[in-house]
Image 1 (spheres, rainbow, N blue to C red):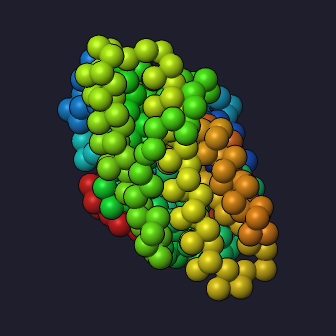
Image 2: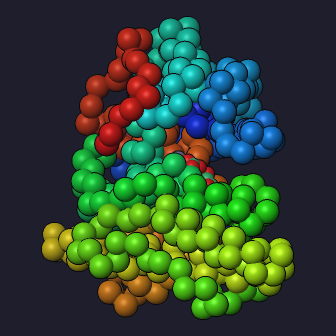
Image 3: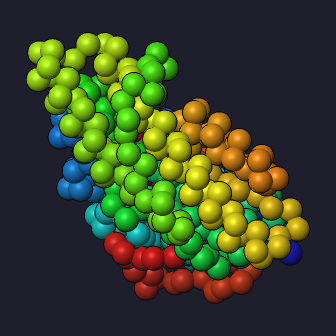
Length: 348
Ligand code: KG4
Ligand code: ZN
């Protein structure tokens, strides 16, 4: 098969992204020629979370520019593109529609095929794009909106082994940051504060670790931080810098502990498939956390499993992963055509 050049668009949450990816359909690894991401953090900052209406408007305003810049940075134009890929779900419907409309317009104008890609498949297939990891591999997807173990058996074959039953870890980091008066996004600021903290000062819960499955829970942990904070405030009239550091460290340690131990559980199921070269992969914004990454790496090493974490820019939301997923999938399924619909809910 000949190499194909894909123009990809992603707009399912609070990043407007476009990318150009080139590779042989179905083959491991592809070239990311460009990857443009416009964040919306400042637009939502005053509201303490992503506001769907504001996100949708910003996507509609920025998506054409993202596409133009992605083509430019890849030193190509629409004539140099073989197919268009777009996140068609799951996500905030207004944003997904902005991307899908833009992609359909480009497909209609150029006559090129269009592929709707599942956002979660994009994350899950990123290790194929970046490292050429062989199927089947185990993926821990941990972001602000998602937390699940996926057995990736092929470009369109995913088995969910378990996941959070309430909050995603990134969401918990963001809420804990708010509780402690730290800036958003909470992940980096909690990690920063935790660096000078004692993780053992507060005994925080590790929910569901006693259960033999791969499910997790993080909302009770966040509530435990809230209670510890309120007790400190009642006892001493406020929070000191060291209290914030210790609570951050305790919280981060508990999340790392749960993710590492549940990974061991997921690895057991994965290893029962007897993969030739077992690999645990991680993706999502929380994978940026150094101590969580280190715990997962140690856990895999102790099980004799390789650990792969794609570069951070491809772990968080981006369009290159959508182009990569389209390349993986296009050799085994037909294009979608101009009737492609945006799907707010779309389990893998
Ligand atoms: O994958 P992502 O960019 O967006 C989606 O949620 O899809 O992930 C963003 C999440 C936020 O909740 C953010 O607080 C968290 O990832 N995050 C981190 C760190 N950096 C970002 N969590 C823990 N430690 C970090 N260093
Ligand atoms: Zn995502």
